[in-house]
Image 1: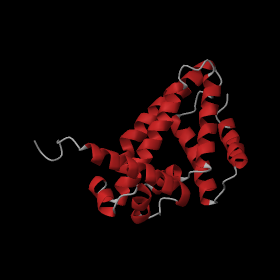
Image 2: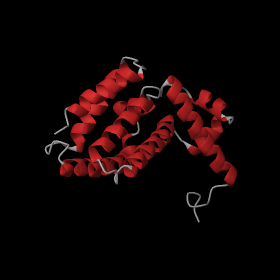
Image 3: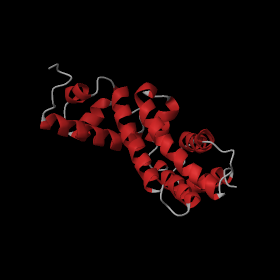
Image 4: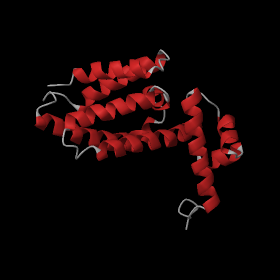
Length: 187
């Protein structure tokens, strides 16, 4: 049995979870530019502990972004059975706007292309669920038939990128641009 296939000790698993939670909090507060020493201190571990689980800072950022993408996918999946798929999509994007206006780590990491190879599968899985929700809205007749997930990605992530770069933290501003972006998709 190789070292890669050995089960991790319970304390190592707990430390990894603490590091990811600390990194998520630090990145939300200070951006992905925050350093590993600050994250290690917040997690209550040494830097060596961080680097045992994450060989590079990029791997740590990827772990945090994967958690956020999985959460977005879960929230999208929960809305697949909503009786009004357009309203479900609106609620999902508005919820994302509310989250991103206080935590820009997801959009910053995705726009910067950080760990793109490590995140490819998580991104594809999340977009697959959004495609299904959008297909339901199209079938309902509330979304333009020519709209693709790529259109939503460009519109919404473009808005998030600009608002993040401009340092906009006002939820009302994020909701306004969310409404404008979604309006372009409405049938």
